[in-house]
Each structure stands twice: as structure tokens, then as C-alpha cells.
Image 1 (cartoon, rainbow, N blue to C red):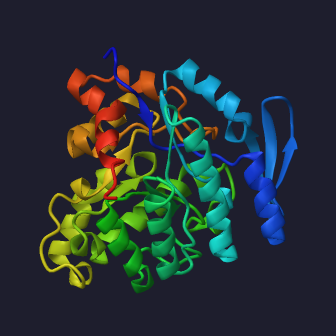
Image 2 (image 1 turned 90 degrees about the vertical axis):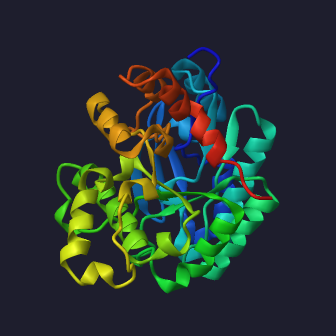
Length: 330
């Protein structure tokens, strides 16, 4: 395994410079960063606090130190889910994307980037994706599993999927605004169950809505080991066989559902990750940590190296497949 450059495809960043620019341009965002101690802060966006927000989320030097300590060579930077700010339109995305590109340009050996998009408008999202890929050198985008309740198979997103396929962009689905939140107010269930559930809904809509069939070259990666997709895909196939509803937009049996998508490694279990790799194939799996959040896996490199899989598959997951996926058609 020596000499393998490790690429963490799932990381988030919100620098203090980005916060200042967003607040100046978009006062309604009202982003505040209030220190708790030397390692953690409270991140508040439009009056809603998130706690704790680790220092590495905004401090680049701390991030680099953490990367070195955990054997991660490259972070693929993306915006924080708290600052998707879809209700504030294009400027919120432009500011964050420009700041991510600035970080990548400053340290191209340590950072790559994928942008955030103004998802409330599919045409505008497509245009911003084209800008960040062709002008800023970002490799794709991360976006929410639903856009203020609108599922990803909504016809309004059609220009985005067409542009993403054309550019060969790496498109990462991240849960946000999760379904059933009113029933998951206790025990942190909104994250423990809500996040993987909403990723699963997003994947199902992309599949049964016909998006994946219409755009077979789309690179769609699902956060947190794909939610429940790799473990319930056979149920989806069975449902298509026995029910008319799943056939509405896809006329042929949706075989190999799990291989329609890509998955990160954030499963918190050696045995579960090994099962997923066996089901999907190592070529559908990429390294991820969810840095800097507390539900992430900072030991993602060590976790993959400890798996009972071949060295070739480990190398593919640690970097080889990501290097292929993060190339774009410019």
C-alpha cells in the first residue's frame, strides 16, 4: 500500500473569509461562529445553531494537521450543509465556490474541490456547475438530497443532469432537510436515521424517476455508504416486478440497481463496509470521512487498510477510483 495517494472525497469547509463575504452580501444568512473552546465553536446560520463545529471546519492549518495525522493526502472540499442556503439564490453559491477554488489554487497538492449550487432553479444550477468546472477547475458539486422538499427527479432539475453528464462532473448527494423530522426529534435520530433515509429517498427518485436511465453516464455518489440503498436494492427490483407504480418512468427491469451509484466508505463498521464492497464492487466505492463533523470517520484511511479485501481494491478505494471520477470533460 506504500505510495498510494489517499483522496478523501467527502469533506466540508466554511472559512471565516467565506462567512464574512456571505454576511456582507446576504445579511439574511446571519452566519455566526462563536468559540466554545480552542477546538470547537457553535455555528449559527439564520438563527439556527449547530454544535459543535470543529475548528478544522474553518481553520485550514488545523485541517492540514488533522489530514497529516490520519494519513489523508487530499481533501475534496465542499460547502457545509448548513450553508447550502438555497433560499438565497446564486450569490450564496458563487461566494462559497470562489472561496473553495481559492483554497484549491493555494494548495493544489492537498485540496480538490466540488461546489455548491443554487438548486432552487435548475437552469441556474446547471449554469453555475458549468462555471465552476470550466472556469474555476472544480470537479463537480455536492447538493442536498431534496431541495426544500422537492425530490431530485423533479423536471426542473433536467438541465442540471444534462450538464453534469456532459461535463463528466462528480455529483455528490448529501442529506439535508430530512423526511420525517417531526418524528425524530429525540435521541439525535434526525441524523442517525434521518440522514441515511433521505439519501435513500433521493437515490430512489433518481432511479425510478428515470434520471439514471436518461443519463447513463452520470456520476452520482451517495453519502454515508449510500443510506439504505445497497441493503434494500433487491426489494426495489422485486417491487418493480410486482407493482405498476415503479414502472411509470422505467420500462425495463432495474437490474444492478446498486451499480448505478457510487458510495463513500462512511459506515462505521468493518463488516458492513466489506459487505457493501462485495455487493457493489470496489470500483463503486470511494474514500470518505465527513470531516470535520462528529458523525464522520476521521480514521477512514486506517479503516480501509484494515479491510479483508485485496490490496488492489484497497488502492482503488483509497485513491485510484477517485482520481478517475474527479476528471472532468473540459
